[in-house]
Amino acid sequence: MDNFQNNPVLLSIFQEVEQIIGKETYDLWFKTADFAFENNVLTVTIPNAIWGKTIKERYESILKDAFLKHTGTQIEIIYNIATVDTPAPAISSAQDVLPSIEPVQQPTNIVSPFLSRFNPDYTFDNFIESPSNKFAYKAAQAVVAKLGARENNPLFIYSAPGLGKTHLLQAIGNQILRENPLAKVMYMSGEEFVNEYIESITQKTADAFRKKYRFLDCFLVDDIQFVANKAASSDAFFYTFNSLYESGKQIVLSSDRSPQQLEWDERLSSRVLSGISTEIKRPNTEARIAILRQKRDSMNFIVGDDVITFLAEGIQTNVRELEGAIKRLRAYCNTHGVTPTIPIARELLADVLTNEQETSVSVNTIKKVVGKHYNIRMEDFNAKRKTQSIAWPRQIAMFLTTELTDLSLPEIGREFNRDHSTVVHARDLVQEKVNADPFFTAEINQIIADIKGVEK
Image 1: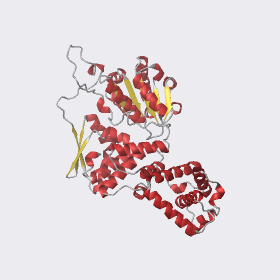
Image 2: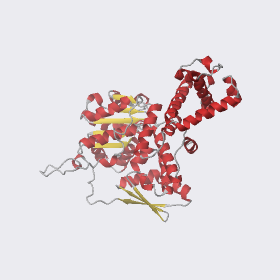
Image 3: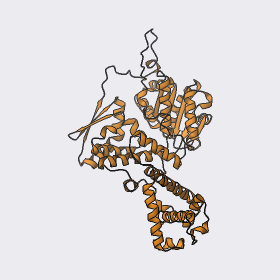
Image 4: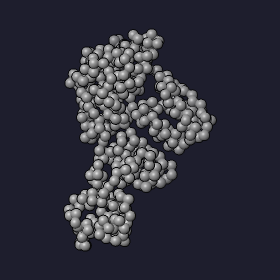
């Protein structure tokens, strides 16, 4: 949304649209479009008619509602198809994408007619590998290295929404076309496949429908669950799948459920289960921090690791929400000319942050974790000894108790055999060091993560 940076209203509108439909869907259909807004008319310039049809049918009402919310006016939307000097040929069969048999000189820079289906930001290089997605990541790379090989075919990736399935599917397509621009690689959603199948029946173009898919080198289908529970579409997909599979062509599918949980017929199920199935799980805290750091760097957004860690700990659902959160924070800070801090992030992103009060943290857990970190015993927290090796960890434990529990200052004092004024002194002393020393802040954040890990 960099082209909206000089228009805070449009930026807010399209950020809201992205939040509603999801980053992956937004990037696929909106990132390649150009938008101009004047006199309550939004002009949408898109690569082709299918693009405009999709935005109009699926997302126009969302666009209009967002404009109404932010501008208070009803808008009109006009769609323009981008004009180019040499229009790309329509693809109805394999012959449309095969090189000419006449002895003509190959152009230096070949542009695949399939390339417009892929988001250039979705690559293997900017996919954050972690224990939660390592096998899926390696399997996706193996597909590119040995396209169509039986040991990698089909590849089935499943996970909850927003964890990177679409990124991996598109990374496969981008990498194949980078290495071989003449490769015939098709990416589409399961819903699109169903809609095109229905349209082919209605328009009596079933033969063209079959040819479109069965001469591909690699077929990437996102959200295959939309096909699995529709009998006629599932049959059409099986015949397409079977034709490609028997021809040694690559098939990659993604779903929000495992293959065993999908309601499709036994023929298709056995085919899918003969390949590789891999699950992407939710990223751990370290992976979420790495994702946010990468996003921060790619956006040239100056935000400290304390805020990054706060977001990573507070947003545990999926990668999409992590990315959306840091974008919202950047937009807010740029618009208001402020430096991102934890209090700003906490207030701005309250709707997506995990409610810390839902996790009850006990004083004993705080003592155990701090004691292990600084190598002191549980009884030292309540002892009268005031040596620095014990007093400092005890002050940190009191500080964390003020941060992570609802106990009053006198109650905290009793937990440490101290009065409330000692708790206040400890809290302020540790807070001062947190504010002044980023290395100590990282240490405290790690202790907090360990405490929450024990409580879970």
